[in-house]
Amino acid sequence: MSNGTIAVRDQLADLKKQIDARQMVIARSLPPGLSQARFEQSIITLCGRVPELLRCDRASFIGAVLRAAHLGLDVDPATGQAWILPFGKVAQFIPGYRGLAQLAWRTETVSKLGGEAVREGDFFDWMDGSDAFIKHKRLAPETAAVTHAWSLFKVKGSDEATFRVIPVDEIEKIRKAAPSARARTSPWTTGHYAEMSVKTAHRRCLKLVPSNGEKSRPLEKAIDLDERADRGAKQYNVEELLDEESNEKETEQEAGQDGGGAAGQVPHSEAGSDR
Image (cartoon, rainbow, N blue to C red; front, side, top):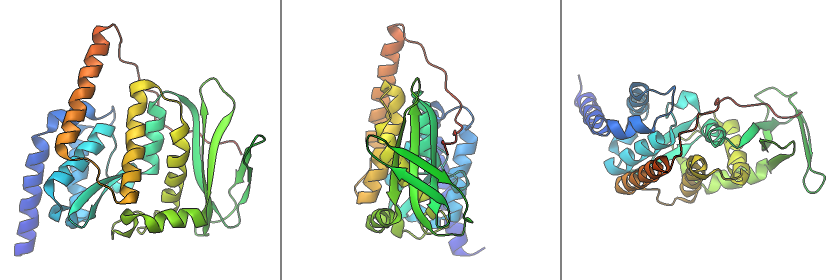
């Protein structure tokens, strides 16, 4: 066994100890269906795939792990919910398009949610304004170039859809300006261009989801974190995250004492859009 392999193994063991030391914080944050063991294994697997993360400032990495847990998103790249990426010596949490969609469902505000990449050869027509509409029929193969991305939602009790469409030249402008897109392991460069385009549209559209108090906070935080990453701005350190969670827990306890009960969660599946 080489010295490098031993060093990575030791770093992984040390990281696991640090994560285990915060297992109560993590377990309290994870949603049903994502066990603590599965979440922690995703972190270890991620580091095995992206060893540069082990060379990042440990506080920034633990902060990114806690943020993923706090939002209840899996960082296994296969899920498309979220990533933790190295930017030099700093690790940053990046929500994926499926992660934003899940957080939108958890607001319990939307009744319908959809988003897709439009490719050359698809039928696509849309208009903004007072007579707004969007029509998309997939005709092109998945290898065809992306021309647009769109996101759409409907609020419970309403038949009117809110949507946003972003053309590829605007998507490219956003991608090229984002430090996260230049990382070797960025989903922009590892075969997830279409998904990242949809996430860009989701981020713009889901800002318009009506607030539902604390149920909307995770979605708002995820959008803020994603925008910070695109600007190359600092996210949050470990201490800020723990203080934030402590404050939110106190708010929840006070609400419970006032007679408020915990609401059930809606299914985390995505609905299709009108075509």
